[in-house]
Image 1 (cartoon, rainbow, N blue to C red):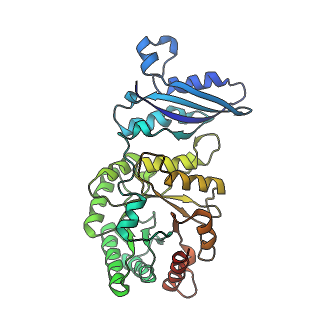
Image 2 (image 1 turned 120 degrees about the vertical axis):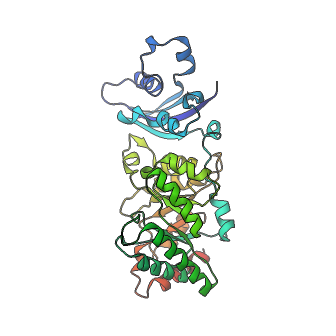
Image 3 (image 1 turned 180 degrees about the vertical axis):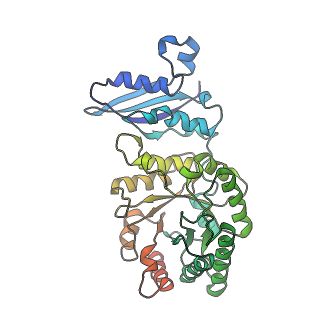
Length: 368
């Protein structure tokens, strides 16, 4: 029987027994019935099986459960359900890892990946720079002007802020076309191209439509909030022949990573799960920003996004928040060359203007 494994951090509440709690996971995520009511087939071929259990500290255990691949029915949505369906309603269960080897036929990972992004954009072995167009309420012309200034300065990637959708001041198609023209115009002037990623986050149907429109207009990639449009939607995009790289944004994901005994570890959600579902870049809240993780968590995301041990193309970690023109040297040294640094406010507020700020940033990246 083909199986795949999920690793859990199980924390006991007062009065709980580890064996009973693990048994409840095995049943809850499969048959949802007491074991005494099951026939032999269900017990042997449907219910999850505990393959590893070790006490880490008082009241805390690392547990590995093997699940029949047949339970998924070939659907990525059912994988999400088995991963963290009913147990998301229970305390003390946190996902820390998955053995993806047996899932590589179901989940395809990034369509482009880190290596091809570098090749496609002719970006050498150095860190990448990125920024966000904002604020919401700006007109398409105003956002395109920002886009032009950033591109003239030589930034690598210009993405929409995740709050830019289809508002009346800057409707999606109008903004898309204006910003593509802006980076083209800057490239004609400087001889060096920046790459524009519009936000396509919407309902699944509209997200797919906007993905197509972005490709038709000449955009270089897209931004998506997978916990708003849906992880299966991101996976669908990554399987389409369009092959625009996807930046995954963490909006609406915080409830899954901020509790130390529930949900997912940040490295699992942002570095593993997003990558499995097709993210070419994974934005995460950097240490020192408004929504901070600690240093170990940030580094664990970086490792998970880049490791070649997973059966998927590698993704660029994209730390955002807390990174400024004044301290980017520190973060380059901390995170390494295979990182896309997302920098916003310090470029907008630079006293010499956006173009000059980006030129200073570019010089730091080129000499790293």
